[in-house]
Length: 102
Ligand code: SF4
Image 1 (cartoon, rainbow, N blue to C red):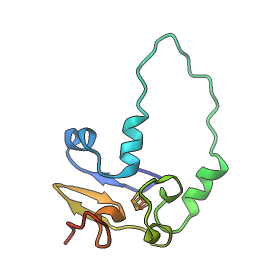
Image 2: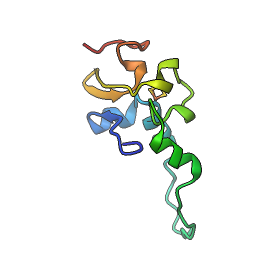
Image 3: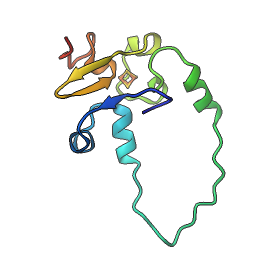
Image 4: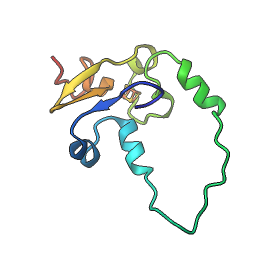
């Protein structure tokens, strides 16, 4: 889920082993190793960038996506069925390079 939208649905092992959505890949790469020596004392606030992502047209992840297409800026992608899972990304939709949606 990203900015209140489900971006990838599928069997946990498949999604974690080979995420399709760029945001799912980013989340997986962001997983930290546990460290009992470190305490979390940082205050969490929504940054201006994050607030803009909630309100933007098109894909909420477009500002940070290395795979962005022109359509991503204007139109929110649909959930497309791909290889036994659902992905909300134009890379897997009707205009994407991995077009397997029907
Ligand atoms: S829809 Fe576009 S911007 Fe959004 S994750 Fe997919 S490629 Fe990236």
